[in-house]
Image 1 (cartoon, rainbow, N blue to C red):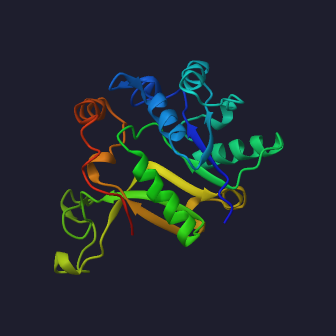
Image 2: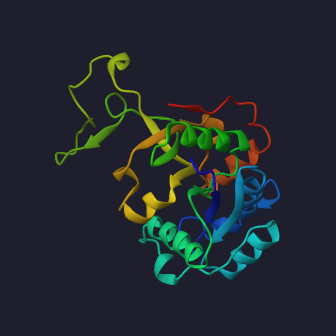
Image 3: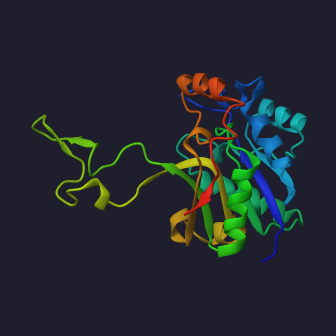
Length: 238
């Protein structure tokens, strides 16, 4: 398989839950900088391209060494806009400029604790098994068969999924999707409507490195863990 790999970082300026999230620091560096520097450290990655609608994020990305060849159109940067469309836009922009994009690697800025070995495992899985997409997961903290409940109209709560399995050992293993990385065939992104329309493989990331920064509490946890999680374990292909 062609190993022409382009890394992308998608970083909107707007964030309602944590304003200016992608510029907030962990271990002295903005989240956008962590993502760009990680991408640049990967020998198989040809370049790192940042897609943002925000000039300040663009400036920080360039300072970190990324290329920012466009500002993302506002209609692709809203809270309700599927990021899939921003993925398509970025690939198409580069292709229209005459650049080859075969393998798409997304490094969301909200996962600053991941390490290069995690991404290498994703790339190895993609090149070995040739799926349409490789995504990252972590062990699920809750299980709908045993410790997740739903509230009924009568005000009582019941198991989210009832009467299927009576022993935890018999239930399917469940995983939470993380924002550590996505690897995909660029042509698949351009022709499919959503990620799970294709053949998807998963790489499990140790819980300690799979933190997704979404709240102020996540920032506190990330700061406490920064620099201490590299030895937490190895990523593995499921």
